[in-house]
Amino acid sequence: MEIVLFIYGLSFFVLGVLVLFVRTKESEIFFAKKIWLLGVFALFHAFVEWVFLYMYIFPEFETILSPIKASLLLVSYLFLFEFSRFILRESFKDERSKLHFMHTLYAAPVIYTISLSSLLTLIIISPSLDGTIAAIRYTYGFLGSLFLGIGLYYYGESLKKSASVERLKIYFKIPGIAFIFYGLFAGIAVSPVDYFPGNVINTVWFLETFGIPVQLFRALCALVITISSIKALQIFSDEINLKLSSSLRQIKRFSSDVSHELKTPLTAMKVEVEVALKEERSKEEYQNILRSNLEEIDTLQSIVKNLLMLTYLEKESLKKKFTKHAIDDIVLKGLEDLMVMASHKNINLEMQTLDSVEMLCDEVLLRTVFSNLIENAIKYAPSSSSVFIALCKVENHAIFSVEDEGKGIDEAKLKLVFDRFYRTDDSRSKSVKGFGLGLSIVKQIVEVHDGSVEMKNRLNGGLCVKVTLPIVYM
Image 1 (tube, helix red, strand yellow):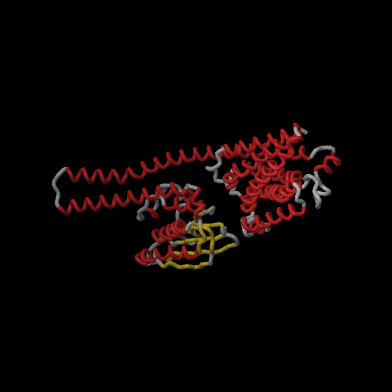
Image 2 (cartoon, helix red, strand yellow; image 1 turned 30 degrees about the vertical axis):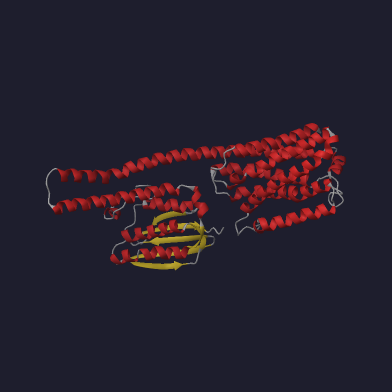
């Protein structure tokens, strides 16, 4: 029995130390940001078992140590309960989920009112110290472990697909099942009490029925949970290392982009200034040179602004700032901004469909997407033609499309148009000024919203760009 209690406590102690010292704050996964709660639970629970071990070896100290054990047990299970609450709410936050009611039930005011009422009721029924410990195990140990197990099992399915997440799923499901069994062994098989199920299913019954102390099964569950968590934490470390490598590549790419695109306007400005300084010139000539330089400065400002936006868009923290907006209103605002531009080319902006769609998003960024695509269509559409715009709600997606009546793009080049600085060299782009950054920005904004963007030539001429965004409510 002594070795079982020691291993049981050691398993949770190792889990707690690993969880609290691993770098998870930089992880993009919600689970990693709340896992410290599991670490605190594990450490406190390790001390619970070691206090129990000391009481088992030295029973004369039981009177002194029992209240300490009960207090540590309550604190440890409260951290476990809170962790289960976060994971469960995150797993079933989608309103379309059949178990979405769990998200509402596990809101702090609701679940803590229910659980505290249950705890006090059970303590009143059996007011002894053993009864209090049993009440703690029933209320926070059993429910916390059971619902954490359910939450972990389903949590992996709610994550955005990636290589690391696919590996993580198995390490969510294994401890998920282990926590469910742990809930049964640690939350149901308690010391004997005067009410059901403790008066029938308890530690004494378990030992008499199976000939093995229930603590052995608790220890096995703890080992499984610890080993699986170690594997999951290693994936978090790999994820962070990949993010650091990605950041370094981003810096190198940004430097390359800047040197590539800024060279031309800077060279033009230098040449003009050098030529102007070689001899005296008239006031009008100096004014023309200054105007030319001013145009190049405007170009530089626009390039730098776009490059900075591309860098900014690669930050996952953007998603945390999403708020609920009507997508149809954002489309109309973008359309309104471009009415004057369209009228100068005698372009007819025709809104074919405008469904009402609300979702969590960044209003400014999506307005950039819609405005950019409509502006491109106006630029490349021939005078006195039409640009067709539509926003449709199809099942759980918002689909925005823009079509023009221009010449389209060579099929071989369609896949390249979203690359930074890429501009087609055909007649579609020769007459239009640009830097090859607009569509790259569009693609990254759409990806920040977990959407997709595609471009294809229309059968009757022109280009069609379609943006598909998943409708996220909360």
